[in-house]
Image (cartoon, rainbow, N blue to C red; front, top):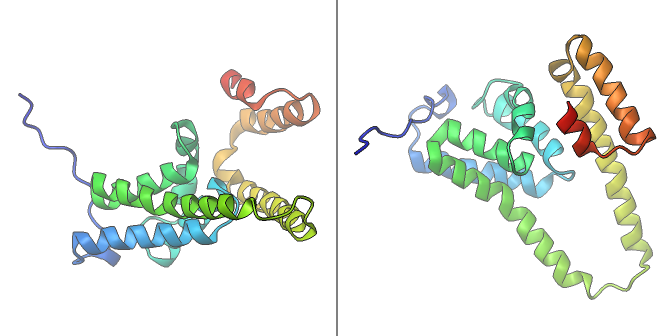
Length: 187
């Protein structure tokens, strides 16, 4: 019979010292819920905001820690936002923290998608306001992706391989329509 205890989370940062476990779990949920509810653009946008919130504003993580872990979050099955939420939750409050943070980041999307699904049937097709909103969202998402690349470029692309591979892979994907999955497997 295995009697070893599961690993405990890392010590709490000074900003949370003396706070109860319930407080930490509630704040984790609230912060991830707020981030996921207000940020448009998916995991990459969420990870930039979360890194700013948890690293800079709250001081719960080192600045840039989530961006440095981005390659890890991309290799683990699941959504980047969920993986980053579980990382922060696990680091601060163990398994319960990971579960609470994941719930906090997933619940807003569930609620918004459910509301859209209910309301979507009521909207006429070809609605100019709806079409304009979708065009605006695509433009905003494009800007978010460019900002993510610019902010994390030096941390992710380093060495001769990175400077050759990134432009080559971009050219293969956009110019020659090679599926990104094949390039990830080949890389």
